[in-house]
Image (cartoon, rainbow, N blue to C red; front, top):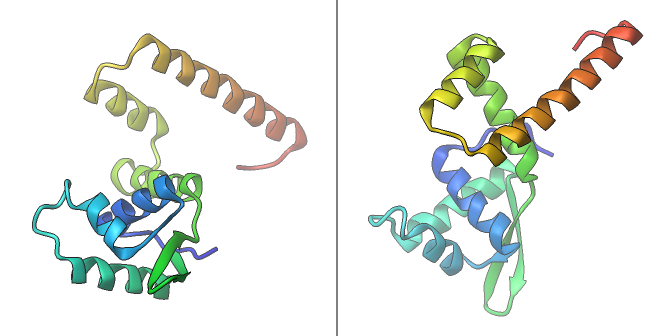
Length: 136
């Protein structure tokens, strides 16, 4: 799996591929078009070719066209992007990162309960690492 962080436009194309599984250039183009009205079909083709060179996507023949698919997992990419954002913007300050995210919009009760569950699981993992004398 490549250690490449996708650009914002590459991330949008990956989202289309994660949703579809496999998609032709035209399908990716149609998936991106509502978000980027000035986007040309040939730009999407070039984008997918560049992404393939980076190892983010692959392709296979689908009749006369190619069907592209993601070579990177959604959770891995999001983890990498979130970690980079945390380090770059907040200098690794997790509490400030979460506080700003919570201030940016009002979470629902269900979202807060999901966060509480994630925090409880993270505490268990941290305690387990501490007991074993592991760092990070």
